[in-house]
Image (cartoon, rainbow, N blue to C red; front, top):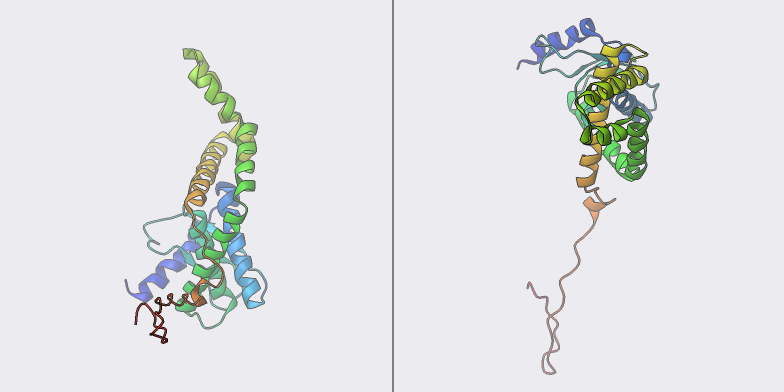
Length: 231
């Protein structure tokens, strides 16, 4: 797609702002993390991130910022946490620099996403404990037990319990908001834990490690010249 067309679509994101309460907390955390990471690399002030709805009038644009204005920058809702970090870091880079360099911005976003994954991997056990505490507080564990041993009326009763718990925790008492945001939050956290279980972190300095020299061939008493196996 033409770059000018993408810029026009990116400008439309400001018309589709979402209140923060409609965005899953993990996505808000990821956006703030990406913006802070970029600001630390550039030595600038952390720009403010604003979430927007995904729309056909803006696709395939996932973020927008005005170069050099210091923010705010825009990120679409509905991405994974690592994708949110990457887009937030990229747009924060644009907001803090004047050049509007897309290549440098994308590189910054990829580096921030890698740093995010490394940080989450290092804290994965704590994240697992936090998820267990959250599901226990919301009553999911007891609901699973009751659901397996339920009578026809139990399902409806426990559905009302979990709906109210999500509304109180994520919707400030508003059921529609709490159920939408709460279910997204739980799904994001569970998917992240599954991703971290399969994640293999890169070794530090792996790119500059030199391969070990191949072992020497056995030498005989009449042959005093050592040779490499691959020579």
